[in-house]
Image 1 (tube, helix red, strand yellow):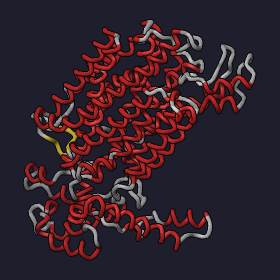
Image 2 (cartoon, one colour):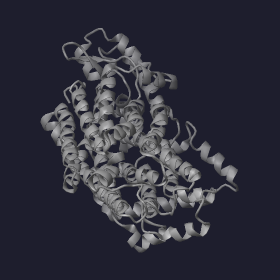
Image 3 (cartoon, rainbow, N blue to C red):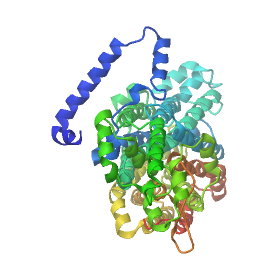
Image 4 (cartoon, rainbow, N blue to C red):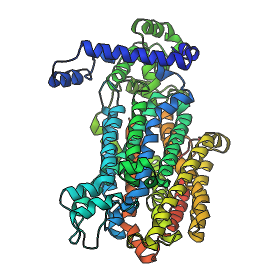
Length: 620
């Protein structure tokens, strides 16, 4: 199959995809159920354990992936960043425009992380235990993507829905609302007097904000775990850098779309104004990106992995008494057996599946390290390894609470990083509109202060586009920097670079500094998108989460799910956003200027750099 892909080219692959789609369509027509209930039953039964439809060729999991294939796997995060760009650029101005105060607006941002901090790790544990034939990660990618789509529809249309449900101005007749719908103000598409009531509009906008914010952040965990699952360990660094590149490109194009004045285009006028045009286009882009990812590579179902582990355990127990180290049998010794199995079934044997996946994603003893450090007293370890099965959901949930020190320190560092980045991303356009352009979001329509604020928000979008672009550029070289200088230097250096950039931006508060120092935010984003998850994957691959006093690796004896740990690390974004939402409004009120947001980002990045010096790197 690999040689065929190497020689057939783009045209050959296109014809292959066309034939596959035609075959699926013909099969669907011939086996189409007569009603919806039968269709639902057949869909559910097709996902049950042991169904024949799961007998797929999983050989792609055991080969190195090209950059193009990694781009396809990572396409979902590009769509996520498109939606995230629209959210961060326009939600805060939209909330302020419908009458929400700064202090209350920051509390609204606390709703999503309050739910996500507790729910995201649980979703990670559920994905580790998901037994559907389509895999463990893709069902959650699809589920969370639905929430993103609903959020993308509610945020720009929340005020309109409010008017339909009875919102309106005391002094404004209904006809005034219809006429003002064509105004060119992208942050205030509808006229509202000081006596306006936006109860329903606020409700729908806040609901859309919570759905969009939570699902966009939570969807990154299964998407990242999916990348790690279908790639070999040696491709993890390349895959994560590609993942970050796609995220940066998504953010760059997303923020660039926000920087354009869609009110002056025919598309913008047809779609209902600037904000609605941006959100509508991004909705279609998001759907295409997610579809591109979930159709890329098939995952090995959990029940196949469990059967593989069981089969391997039985074989190793038979020869454990004859071999000095039975659990570490060489692939060459059983190569003929595996090859024969692959010829018969059309997919790798249970032993191959186990070696390629279970050891990668589970907290198990590493055979190479065992051979070096265990000596002759390894019979108990062999027995434990051979009899190991997929743990219960309760075990994975308990592993969220009982974390080794290495993961706790990594969580703390990632928390500081996300707090520093959230300060920039969520409040940056408001900072540019008020502190740099000297505008006022609550000024009367058409006033100089209101026009300045809108110009500042649009200009801030270009600054955030620069940060996304720098994220992509930096991600191209971060893998080489890690190999050249080491993970610790890259991690600490990236956070320090962002600290200096934000400090200079807060001091200068000029248009040129908004564009220049936003590039440092891209370095930060690439760092927090790559380094924590590269280290987690390295811990699992080495089966080591602790080191002794001499700095030597201590082998673990339990089982940890990769999806669970990735979700734990990812959930720090929710905690960061929740903490900042509680205090940022007060900080701005005390300081009397939104410049305090950028100053806080600089300080938190400095704290993260100090914390990163204490992370366990295992010679990475």
